Image (cartoon, rainbow, N blue to C red; front, side):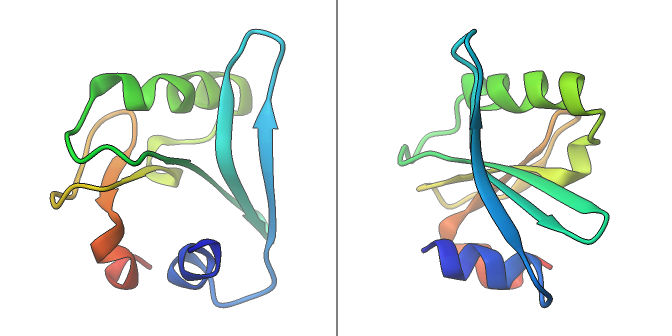
Length: 97
């Protein structure tokens, strides 16, 4: 699955990592390629939850990254963007570039 995520977002050399801090915030996957950084939370739930964006909002505050570079990949079927990040069904990963 990680390979599919990486190929969906980038076509060049990729560095990926996990991030967390002592305040219990974490990001499941951070992709870095050149000057582009993308933060991804991966959730198994099929129903969208506002709390899925909590760690991404914190990451944006720390890193200065924009919501356009923050994603929640989840088990549902919908995909849409919010002011804090985008929700993408794992079923649509091939469409995201």
